[in-house]
Image 1 (cartoon, one colour):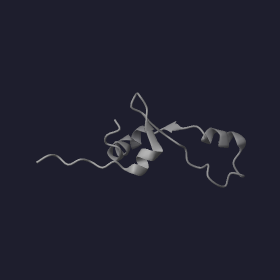
Image 2 (tube, helix red, strand yellow):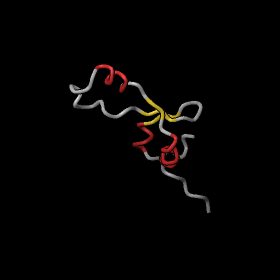
Image 3 (tube, one colour):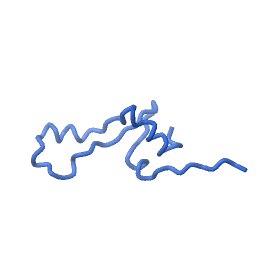
Image 4 (tube, rainbow, N blue to C red):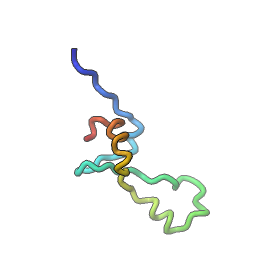
Length: 68
């Protein structure tokens, strides 16, 4: 009997992207509401995407098994 396929977590797949070197990019949290109390430079830096921390990569690889 063939081994079962693993399901990709679709919410994770839509939120993250794997780079060519195998790192994972994600958007930053904290830019949806309550923006009046945040400064312009803080809001500007929240626009940029960041890499997923190495501590979280095990969970990300489990959620997206075929992305790597």
